Length: 609
Image 1: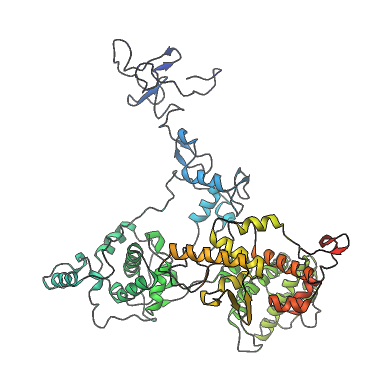
Image 2: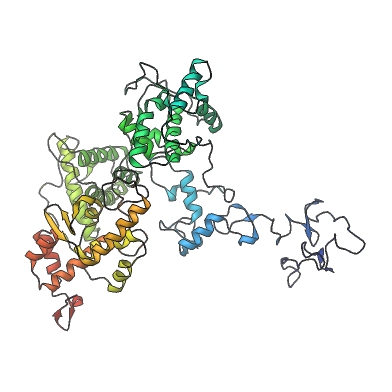
């Protein structure tokens, strides 16, 4: 019905007074019944006054696709601008409705719209643009994907559609004698072997092998295979790779408690790899397995099977290498080449002069963060090689950095120029003899006890256990991820040379978590205490963000809070702190300095927590 004013948009028309099913024929002039219920009718509906169609008449002379309040009228999503949403859902697609309930409103860093923004500072539209242009194994480039334009899409169509059907579920992991006999009979009678349900149990041909140095015919044109052609070929492909790995797939399925669906996914992924590879006898690179999601293939479990079969060539970049590639983008070629050499020495070590042992990946990541800022300053000054950098350039670049990042940048510069001088890529080491700036340490502060108490009573048992282990015994995040089930015996936790009697609240939450784990994953053989949906069918530990992603606390802050309360409770007994939490004397001194801190004392007396 018309809204107030001549230019107002149309409103939702009322229902027919007689049938109460169709909207009224007209609201101005007013007609309270539809054309089917008009006295003397039914009468044929007039054509739409906007598009001219004679079908699907709605109201006010408009069809159901032209009337702005029709339930069938499509429009653009308010969030991602995708076409194909309807007014009954408030012009919002399904993913954007989920997005609004999980992220607060703000200003997007890349398109400047006021809209719900995710943790990366990007709205859902900018996230989808980055995912469209993301290269396999590379981080999302939000700025590059949204710099010039944005490709719109149809609503509710970004969910991954299955381009090839799954294998038919099998009643058991291993076929019985009757099934094996039927498969053998099909081969003897000349029937197509791929039509046998248990094709992968057939013996693979004698002499089948896979090697590293198989020659591959280079492609003249780089073209993406047609998914439909791949689907048809996979269904009829007689794969030696699948037959060779069939026993390993069965062993993994039995050992890790795979479902029939997961086992079939891995089998189908092996058939995809055999179809997509240039040479059928070459070993498989992990980067090729990373391409399987576009054909709805499995990645992690397939890599595990290939690794155990000895057919995997590991060429995936590490997280530090991805971080370095993102930070070093745009540097001059010579500087980038020298930085890549330094990164290789830091991660792999060097047996040549100057010799160096491999560094921890987190240490390398911190040094990259400080080093790239300094290098960008030199690039802005017009330098193209580290041989042009002098000591004055280093001092000027470090002077503009905050103390924490300056400390990391000094360490990185010292290591970088030492490596380049040892490789004879620069004439002199400008860092030689330069004094090191002492690190300005932060003062640990106490957390709100109400927040800790709320997380200790978290409904998720794994979150409650993780918070309890850190809050009561000051475990680090790395130690918590490495704890195994066999490290806890008779209520005592063993970490290295330390034996920690677990507190009563920790034992209560430990029991609740173990009961939940046994109920959800009864066949799990992962030796680690904490497991997730991704690590339960494997032997690897959980990631660094599990289970802290959905809560406000972080393990490092919670650990500092526990040590801080202990140093105040003991009156500054460093020996006890070192023995209780495994700290060095230098690390414990950082907490000792808080004894006289004005924010951590009450009426001039040290706080007892």
